[in-house]
Amino acid sequence: MAQRVFALVVGSGFAGSILAWVLSRAGRDVVVIDRGRHPRFAIGESSTPTADFLLDYLAHRWNLPELAPLAAFGTWQAVYPEIRCGLKRGFSYFGHSPNQPYEDTPDHSHSMLVAASASDAWSDTQWYRSDVDDFLARSASNSGARLIEQSSIEQANWDPGTKRWLVTVRTNHAANSHAASSTGAVDRVETTTSSTELLETNWIIDASGNGNATALWCGHTNDSDWMRTRSSAIFGHFDGVESFSKWYEQTIRDEPEIFDADDAAQHHISDRGWFWMLRFLGNRCSVGFVDANVATTSIPEHASSAERWDWLIKRTPTVGKMLERAQLVAPCDSSSGVRLEWVSRMSRCRSNAVGDGWILLPVAYGFVDPLHSFGIAHSLSGIARIAEALLGPDSDRAGLLESYANDIRAEIDWFDTLISGSYLGLPSDRDFLAYASLYFIAAIDFEKQMVADPSHWPHGFLNAGHQAMRHVASDLWRIAKTRHQYRQVGVDQVGEAPRTKQNDFVNAMRLAIQPWNHVGLLDPSLRQRLNHTAPPKRFRGLISSATQT
Image 1 (tube, rainbow, N blue to C red):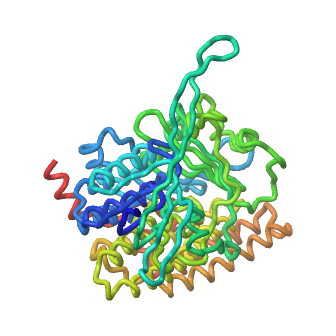
Image 2: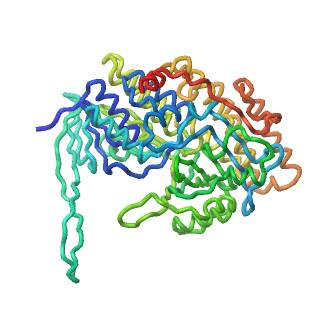
């Protein structure tokens, strides 16, 4: 006999677990399945003010006071010090020349710091996903959701008459036994058995990493060819990464900074992409390189992950110095041990986000790449919209889900425009950062709306539906594309002329964003230092939770 449930959530990362927590707290029967088990390595750790507002909104809207403290560094540390995270005051960027130690100029032409918070207590956070995902999965389970790990869908059939799914879930069970070896020693042997069970459910909700977990049953297909961003990434977690801000202070900085550049989503920009560094409390650091796939220099063919990594850090010697004594600690598996992870292409998109009895969360529907830290906030925005559709009046559900499907497509396209435009600026870090200002004006404008009413987004998530802003971004993207083509054919050679062209591009960007630029982006007098761009975080759920603790 099949167990009847309201929803089957596929994937117990933070997005699937929070949605399952919301649904179960609202009294719905939920089962969550996952191929793996917690705790486990996961990448994608940088939060933003938008994510903070959405966390607090979800906690307030759906009666999850336990979730609210994660919305700011101070309350996180006060309530959940055992869940590892890092302090994130904002974004920091440093442009490196190939094979040269990092250098800057008095006007900071090769660096930019953008503060997102006025103090450490109200700052964003770097999520140590192994801890955070485990906590959220356990919270969903404690609220009534049933979590089945090491499981996957074996078969799923939709009945249009009953409007329900009949799903066969297969679960693998690992057990340890002992056997004598040829030498007489007794070795531990891990054996695996499996079992199946039937579930009958109204909804299959895919919160897996790429949507493949439900594609066969739900009929959504890969639809990524249109995307302009084609970046790859190599990454891992390290212990013992040296401080960049200390080195910067000793060798370059001539005045106090607006915040510690290590307490940030730190970007080290090269001619072909950028390194990220996200630091957690303690000694651990998430480090990765995003290859933007726009440079003329090539990584050696058929190189292993370790060989790619060595090649990249040798071309960025200051980053190499920071990693000189660092130890790679994750990801790790039983077969290959500790190794760097390499993803040959990150951008992806599915053909649809909604169908008969199924929904894809943003993490399953589409992704561009890590630049601008869209991931956590976008997933939380999807949870907010799906929860409203599933828990609201039945008469509103179809319309809300149709809007969600249309909007999320526009959002992935918007992110793709913002990211690919910056990559067209390479190898110029100035062009890269000038185009990145479009992200900041969109995010700052959206955050002001979140302060006013976190449930109402008149221009869409992160202004993806702001037609005037999108028109400006498209025009500037075409200019960036033309400049990129000139560089490829050798028109833009080193000398006085390209510097004039670069200034023209920065000036064009400054003029184009003027209607929304209230914080001084690209203002030469501020020398690439933007202090406190986020609006005050007037949280509702967060303040009440922190007071009760």
